[in-house]
Structures are given as C-alpha cells and as structure tokens.
Amino acid sequence: MAGIGFELRRLLRRDSLLGTLQAYTYAGIIASGPWVLSIVAVLLIGLLSLAGAHSKFIVTQFQVTITYIIAFSLMLTGALQLVFTRYTADRLFEKQDSVVLPNFNGALLLTTGVSGAISIGVVALAFAGTDPLYRMLVVSSFVIVSDIWIGTIFLAGAKRYKAIVALFALGYGITVFCALALEHLGLAGLLGGFIAGQAVILFGLILVVFHQYPSNRLVDFDFMRKGRFYPSLIGVGLLYNLSLWIDKLMFWFYGPTSQAIIGPLRASMIYDIPVFMGYLSIIPGMAVYLIKVETDFVQCHEGFYNAVRLGGSLRQIETSRMKMIASARSSILQIIKIQSITALLVFAMAPAIVDSLGISRLYLPLLFVNLVSAGLQVVFLATINVFFYLDQRIVVLALTALFVLSNGLFTLATLIVGPLYYGYGFASALLLTVMISFYLLSRKFESLEYHTFMLQ
Image 1: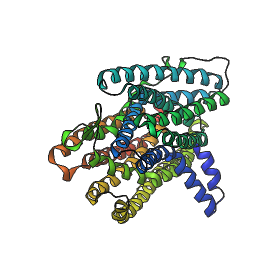
Image 2: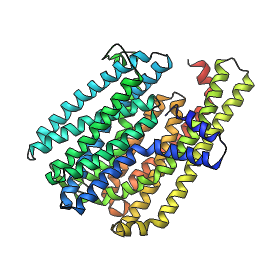
Image 3: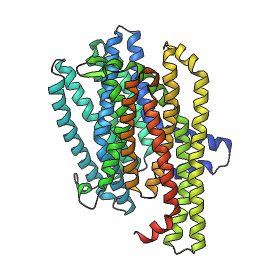
Image 4: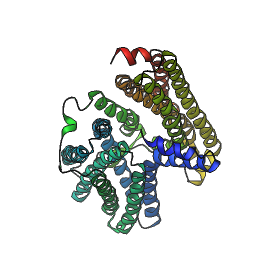
C-alpha cells in the first residue's frame, strides 16, 4: 500500500470536514472496493436470477463455484503476489521502469501455465460427472481470476489504485449485465457472464500496464532470479491466504455442517452467511487503517530513517523513534476503536438486518462472533503491515504460520464440541496471533536502533 499516503495527505491537508470525509471515503474504496464490488455483483446476480425463472439451487451452484474459484486462486497466487509486488517496488525505486512490463508478462505467463495445468487436472479427476461445458468454464474462470490477482497486486504496488477500482467497477457491471443476458442458458450462462466481466478486468489491467510502463522487451523472468526475490515472502503469501480460508474449508468439508452442491464442491450455509455479513463490517476499519498507517505512521517512519541516513544526532534519532512508536500505537488503537463502534452498531441493528434479508435469527450468535473476528483481522493486518515497513519478513512469516496452525486446531476443536462454539475457533486464533504480534512489535521497537545500525 506504500504510496497511497501521498493522495490521502493531500486531502487531509485541506483541514476541512469535506477534505477529511473525502480522505476516509477514498481510503475505504481503495482498501475494500474490489472485493466489495465482487461480493455485491455475485449476490446481485443471484437475487436477480431468483426473481426470474431460475431455481434457487442453480443460483447456489453458481455462487459456490465462484467462491471456490476466488478462494483457491488466492491461495495459489499468494506465493507470487508479495514476491512480485516487492520486485516491482524495488525496480521502480531504482528507476528501472523498462523492466516492469516484460516481468509483468512473465508473471502472467507463469500464473496462466500453473493455474491452467492445476485446474485442468483437478477438473478432469474430480468433476468427471459434471457437464463438459461447466468444466470448461470453471477452468477458464480459474485461470482468468488468478491472472487478475497478479495484475491487481502489481498495480497496487505501482500505486494505480484508482485504475484498480474503476476496472473492477466496470468489469463487475459487465459481469452482472452479461450473466443476466445469458441466464436462459442456466448455470453455464451465469458462469459465461462472470467470465465476460472478468476478461474485461484482466485486459483492462494489462492495457494500463502497457500504457504506464512501455518497454522494448516483451517477456522476462528476472523476478525469479536469485537475489531478486525473497523466499520469506513466498511463505507469507501462501500462509496468509491459507490462514483466512482454512476454517471455511473445514466447515465446507465437515459432514454435519455442509452439503454437496455440485461435483466435489460443498458449502456450509450455517457458517458462510454470518461470515459474509461479518466481513462487510470491516470497511470502516480498513479506511481508518489506511488513513492512520499510510499517513501518520509513514511520515514518522520516514522521519526516523531519514535521520539515520542523513547523519542525524542520537537525540534526533531517538526522538524520531519515539514518534514512530507513538504513531503505530495510535494507529492500532484508532482501528480498534472504530471497529468496536462498528460492531456495536451492527449488534444493535442485526435483528432488523437478518429479518429484512429473510435470514433466520438463529444465525445471530455466529454473526456476533464473526464481527469480533473481522475487527481482529483488520488489527492483525495493520500490525503485519508495520512489520513490513520495518522489513521484518521473518517475523511476519512466523505470525502467519501461527495463524494457520491455530486457526486449524481451534476450528477443529469447535467442530468437535458442537454448534454453540462455531466461529470461536477463528476468533480465538486471531486473538492469540494479534496478542503475540503486539508483544513482538513492542520488542522490535525497543531494539530498533540496534537492528538498524548493527545488522545491515
């Protein structure tokens, strides 16, 4: 996210209510716009299809298929996302803009080949009894969505945030239109409309890259060379995405909490709906996260390292360090406050919300737990982002590994003890990981001068 702070600072510099409102709105859109648009589009397709001639089961098959495509494409590309983002940021910092395009194309080719081979193999083995057209559409969707994650993370690293949101808005608008236009074809028509919109997003991302970073070379794999990438970032990308999905996967494939949907795909209605509703509550927290971390903390971070690089006195360096620590603590505290307020508002409004959506109030206890989990996830994201600014990749790798392990073990325990404890596994894993990350961050700040000067 480095770089968005410049735009946010410009808006906040106006020192007016309108400027502050614009800054928080902009931060919220950038932080959560693409995934909110995708969720809303898929739900809108389902609602409009139900209003037509489609059965509820066909709509469920479509939504579950897309959920699996998004989940597994994120886990697959997680190994490359952070690695390629860091490579791009380093090359742009070195003013080597001409190497960006060929390596972007190389990353896309690698992603297309790997995702295509894996999806073809899985579909051939596990979806043998399904319609051949459905299998072909699943493979196409998986490859395109995997490529989109690479393009999105690349443009985020290149600071093209507005282009990302605009392309997602256009693409998912086309997705809804085409899916409804083709809905008479059933499940294949809904998936075909989804692919049409995703293709628009992907080609839009590619066009932005070609326009922004012209080069006389077409393809290169320099980002895979030794010394050009950080193995720890591969592990972080894999583990972070797995940590967010492992509890969902366990609920999907645990018999008492799931049901078969299509082929090998299963869903857990008892778990999925509250989780989705809980995730919508993180939008305010994500906005505060960007505002606080990418403006206040980044400025203090730059102040500390400028004092180090430019030969500041010991007093100046120590003062800058204390300001950075205070800013990090203030940022995390603000996120906790805004998420607490948001959770309390949703607590109060939850009965009316579920009634208006036609959802049973039996979901409310799990929804309340997931509201806490969603807030903790924003706090964890802010904490590991601070570690990334301090270049503590191994610490982030250890924290994400802890999150995966604890989420898997705690979720398994809740599945064993029964429905009253569903959702507490994810919440407990996040609470444990966040508390340990706070402790490690405090220790790291205490010895920051030593690590800065002595371990380079």
